[in-house]
Amino acid sequence: AQSVTQPDIHITVSEGASLELRCNYSYGATPYLFWYVQSPGQGLQLLLKYFSGDTLVQGIKGFEAEFKRSQSSFNLRKPSVHWSDAAEYFCAVGAGQAGTALIFGKGTTLSVSS
Amino acid sequence: DGGITQSPKYLFRKEGQNVTLSCEQNLNHDAMYWYRQDPGQGLRLIYYSQIVNDFQKGDIAEGYSVSREKKESFPLTVTSAQKNPTAFYLCASGETGLTDIQYFGAGTRLSVL
Image (cartoon, chains in turn orange, green):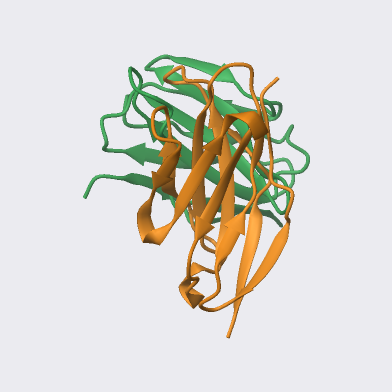
């Protein structure tokens, strides 16, 4: 069965420092992978997606993620964190069949310290 | 502006009462979804619909019902059979014929009085 694991429940990063949020997935074929961000009391916003091709994908707000098939990982990175990046981040995997639901990880809450 | 509108933003349910959460999209998407979010649990799928007049149960459909009479609308009813309805409910939509990108509404927070 498909699954997504985000090992870190909560991470605190200093403003201006680099960030890496971990995501591991379990899926038999090449997955479709996503990172979403959620501010408190809000819906989810798509940060970036991986379908195929270049394993390093760029997203909005200066985020990037790298797909590593050998490690079944899709970690999210940002070189310099801003206070406005404080939010909850969700990794998700799709089956590659349009119209099917995504499987979400349980999320990582990012706090940014000054 | 195109998007997904969920209403109301906050909703309170009394014991034994059914309540309906609204979800409307003007993105012309075929597929629509309902997720439930609890703290530390991520998002869990309640129901989804790929086309009008058709829908499938997700992982936690018990105590919930949906309808899909129009492409733009996918209301969720939380019935009295759902004993623990307090949660944040998120509606999403996406295009069939493409990959699984989903776009989310701002959510409805349901509490029990």
